[in-house]
Amino acid sequence: MQRATAKPTLVLVGDLSALYDINALVLLRQSSTSIVLLVVNNNGGQIFSLLPTPEAERQNLYCMPQDMDFSHVAAMFRLN
Ligand SMILES: Cc1ncc(C[n+]2csc(CCOP(=O)(O)OP(=O)(O)O)c2C)c(N)n1
Image 1 (cartoon, rainbow, N blue to C red):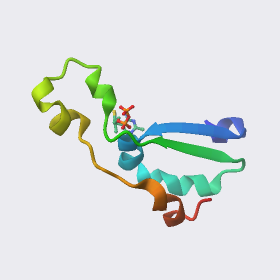
Image 2 (image 1 turned 60 degrees about the horizontal axis):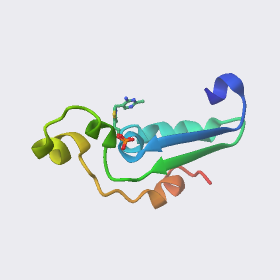
Image 3 (image 1 turned 135 degrees about the vertical axis):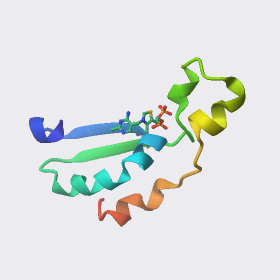
Image 4 (image 1 turned 90 degrees about the vertical axis):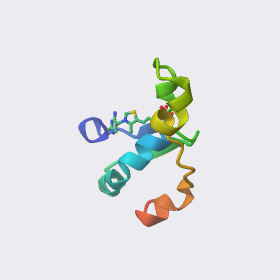
């Protein structure tokens, strides 16, 4: 979307989504405008709590909390 619009862009993603597609952060280095990426680090795919998933297995099989610390990710991809 940022490439199509060439506008400054705010990106909001959950922690599992950020982890799942973390290699895509390398693309932010090619951005022509500023991008702010905000990771909601609430430990897991809480969207699956909205679905009729079995409560006993919900944490381990659906939410899958990973206890990630994203504070070094920007440096890893040489982003500000
Ligand atoms: C671009 C993209 N990558 C991966 C997925 C697969 N996916 C669906 S839900 C989900 C996890 C959602 O959890 P989180 O990102 O922590 O957000 P929350 O549910 O807590 O809002 C993932 C990785 C997707 N739908 N789209």
